[in-house]
Image 1 (tube, one colour):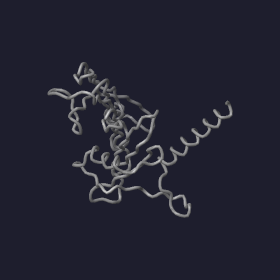
Image 2 (cartoon, one colour):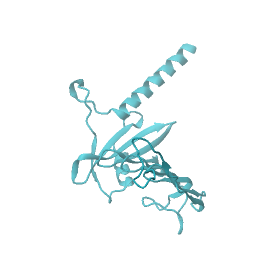
Image 3 (tube, helix red, strand yellow):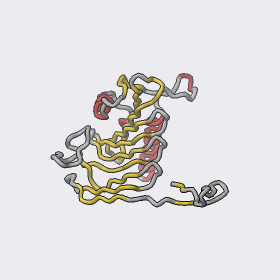
Image 4 (cartoon, one colour):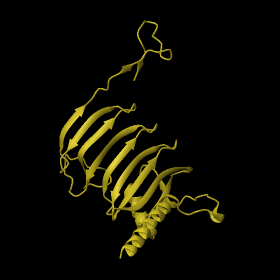
Length: 214
């Protein structure tokens, strides 16, 4: 009995490891060269293409091991830069999609998470230098009404919980809180302190004041 249990657990662990490898290193190059080919779907990305359009296409494709998939989208009119990467994985027996958007400089622009029903529920957004811009969660189980914080992709998606906003220096500048139905219940703005530092690398201004490092 114990031997069988150990065997089952070992097999399960091996499958999970293989699943992770398939998710992040799909389509190995011929001859075991160690090169990996990007799996590009025939959709190009610009401001008119929604996440749902891309996710519906990916969802229609044959499933991989444990439904593991990784697909990529290029910019419209620019086949040299990766615009979107879509991954589908099984987490705690639930399917989850991750849409990762990139700036053309290669830095991550956002990570947006979707349920197996293609409902957005969490997002992390970044500036072009990869510093955080804002983050927050969505509640897709109710219908948005006038005055609620509906998002462009789904009229039924509303903000919920705590949303945090940052300036380009990475300092927190605003917090919003939303109730379960999408009503804003709290908001507060912050003025990040300006730190001053006078060193040989940060000499005093000709007027005698230290330069300000923001």
